[in-house]
Image 1 (cartoon, helix red, strand yellow):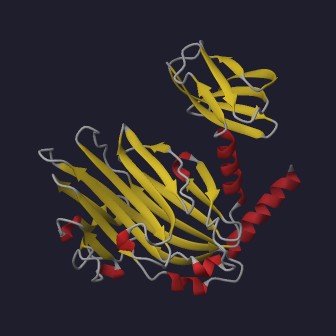
Image 2 (spheres, rainbow, N blue to C red):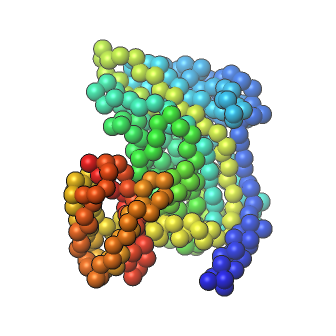
Image 3 (cartoon, helix red, strand yellow):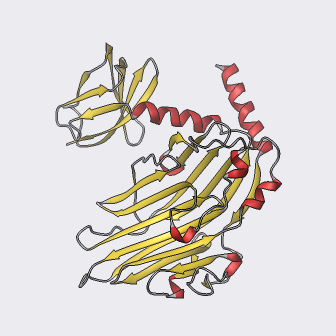
Length: 352
């Protein structure tokens, strides 16, 4: 155990000393007011940011504002009854890669995002998109540029549904709260052709293939991070009420690392394992069935409440399909830790 801990700490230390911050922007050095010069997407505004408004061409939709406890942040907000797509973007970032040390082939992109309020499905559609793009194509004709990583946030259905997309268009769904600051972190591993997507607020990491079908022998040079796009979309019909959307951004950073941190890899493995299990019915009343797609044996199920307190533990004789009695649980949300020979999978259960 001590040996394993030493190895993990050593890897973390090596990552730390090799870490290089290539780009940061927290908007504190910007002036309060309009971010852009105009909304054509052609004339740079503050600190090189470009802004684009598809229909209304209102410059004040993009602004630097003061945020309590944060300093200055970027705000993209609208109050409209018509369809609109708003884009704030920054390009020509790829030359920053020339400053990285040899072997630092993991690029880490971080951004803080304010989720804003829920939008009812019977009034209008509302979507926010955060895009990390390559240096080819036109960012205004999404998605012609190579989109290295994309987060799409649907502000409907009671929560914001999160879809990270990468080169092979693999989608992962996750619910995150409204009116909350959330951090998103992408680890683009060019050596192993993997992208790890982390949401620290909920302690989750997703992993999928990255540039899987590209034949280049120098991926990080051919597909660098070159552009950041922040987009807010409002889709409103005739005679619908005014829709107000707020999207705020802060603490943008790009870092170069020698390897993906081991704790991120470990968390992604847990998520991959959990995705293979299915609970039904969920919500459950008395009994929940636990199955999996690969005939993995479940040896033990431990029930925790959302505060992390262990409530019960039940041992099974390595069944691939088991039933768990939850009749004694109070109504609420619980986390089931499923112990298998491949590791521990964590699944969320709702008790009626």
